[in-house]
Length: 182
Image 1 (cartoon, rainbow, N blue to C red):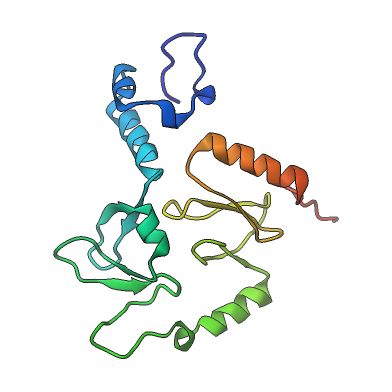
Image 2 (tube, helix red, strand yellow; image 1 turned 180 degrees about the vertical axis):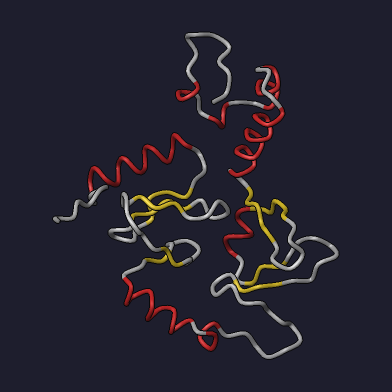
């Protein structure tokens, strides 16, 4: 939790978008807290992309990342590319890439058989072991969805927007918790 400049000030009521870098610096945040704030600020317009080949990470534009079919490592000394849908390596000098020829239909069958769901944004398979039906996909995706209906709730890293969207979804559409009879 970030330090509070006065006892009447509450962080949970502050909209992160309204906190400027100057204000964040004036609050006397530790380096770790400031880095966390910076990453939250950046997550509104970028995602942290991790390359499996060079094992490095870099922020990339969120809109470009979400629209890409093929992802290329943005670092100048790395030429690794992969398919956004099936996550397989793309070899630009080899055969044309086809997700269907790489086990996608087998994965779809397994997902159906096991009762798993796909993230509605990035299509990552998700398995719910226990707990509530509110699912959160990986940090790069930031998609919040309902495991029960598979519907997108919100695509955001901002706590306030997430809370409101989750609350609205589970009040009007689906059950947050399923109690199994034993």
